Image 1 (cartoon, rainbow, N blue to C red):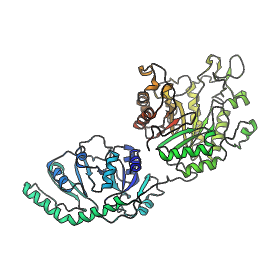
Image 2 (cartoon, rainbow, N blue to C red):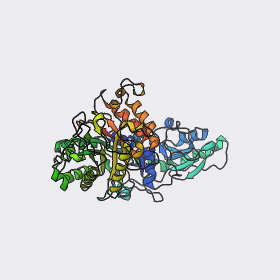
Image 3 (cartoon, helix red, strand yellow):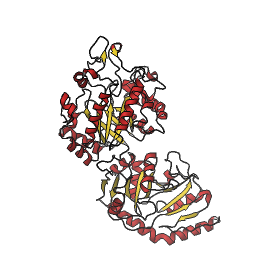
Image 4 (cartoon, helix red, strand yellow):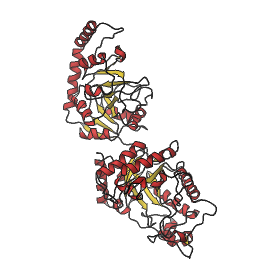
Length: 568
């Protein structure tokens, strides 16, 4: 039960055994999850979804209560009666309340469902687990089969075997004190065409109760099989993934791994275990890091000619297959213009200094010149080779001019162009040349891009405006510890991750809306400026998920990760 509740709270779509047939369940306050149910069922957007809550007291938070609803609830809840009334809540997602501001709600009689509602602590969508227009499904294998391989699929199924056949719930409208039968189901509720005095009304209710005692008895008794079924099994749907096609996963929750970590069997098993226990579903693996070394056994002629590789990953294809077997989305991280190895091997491609020779930053690292098309082609070749291994996404980092060191010594070769124009041209080049490849493309950017406007490229060539049509995801590195003292009036921004993220997203998201790119930020998962415990990690996640459905990535250079701050 706790695992199922955690799945629902984590935004997952779960097929659940209900009092009648199998149903699709999700957190009714999670807009992304509700939207997915509409897509999974191929359900018209104007056909709202019903919700279940644990008790009448909770129902009163969502329904405008009147005398008729009170009598129906008193006589039929918990039970197979769905009541449609005026909606007075505010936290449900769009698609729950109808255009006339009514909502359909039920208090289930099944103790198992009731307990699940209590553990989730939020209303749960409980619509039939079928494609719209088809019949209800009572067998777990059948319901699983109808979704397998489709473009839009649930995340998991709670397998209770074959459910006993029960009629669907009765649905009544009880707005403005008038009872209307919308669907006659398990309960027999007499239709009232006009108002009657209360004596007549109670007589009708009494007759209805007497007429449906047998149905209710057998309906409730059958549900006990679900409650007492100790063989409930939770299994997960595989996203429809075909080699040569883009991975359909859209919400990525990942963490960064060096090539050493990814190439270690013990470490990768540790990470897989962490992912299984949490909401994580992705890893970012270095294929070319800050050193400029190609970190797998590249067969590119120029790489071998220059000696710019160091095989740390081993069998990359086997590694990716292992991760895919565990339903893990795999991103290849590739640094671009900070490339000391290539700069030393091909000094004519390097950024020069005014006094002569190759320029180096404050760490002594050389950079290649972002204006050199040879550098672009070299990195394109690396990306295309990596794609053949089966990576789901290519993530380009250090897509900028240098920022640290003796900048007065740098010789720029941009001519009459601005730095952001050079970078924009590079983004377009990669986007065009990789457009036919079965991968997604993402770009790592400074966190401040979310707040900058106009031609302000921070003197490194990075602007959000130049990326939004040239990548699938932009990944601002919004580490609170990297914002200067005084930012937002904070002496130490690292202590206030929610404020830093809220400010960045509020300013940056309008620049992305309506464009190709989605925002998927890097989150701080390391101690700098403050101890980044569960509370601070979760604070970043909460704001990121408030503004974007694309997910987030955890960065810890030492690859020391725990489940702190992560949902189960």
